[in-house]
Image (cartoon, rainbow, N blue to C red; front, side):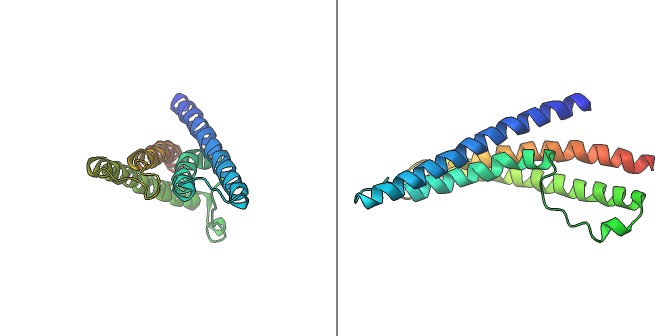
Length: 161
């Protein structure tokens, strides 16, 4: 189990670097477009590019955020429960999260294939949209694997207690 976790954490860190690069590209494109507008020019499709890069940022940072436990957790009710009850709740929410993101990944892959078949492109610069939807599916798939491993670990701890 430790080896799988290590591989998934490494993959999550790498996709997070892609998300960082996409944030940087969004900033550069936006700043350059604003500066060019003062000169009565602009970058065509800035809105499309920034929107598509936003999908990359979100989907490619999901797994790393989960690995680092950087998500928001509302624990004020759960803290009052026993340790065993907390472990059971963690296991149940882990399973639900794993199933949700597995389904999201699958449906996004189907959606990307539909976009590919239909030739769906962005409005302004006519860039194909399916690679970005497929990237979102891959980001959700990686998150699913991270959550599944965390679920197994949490379920083991709950059973021990």
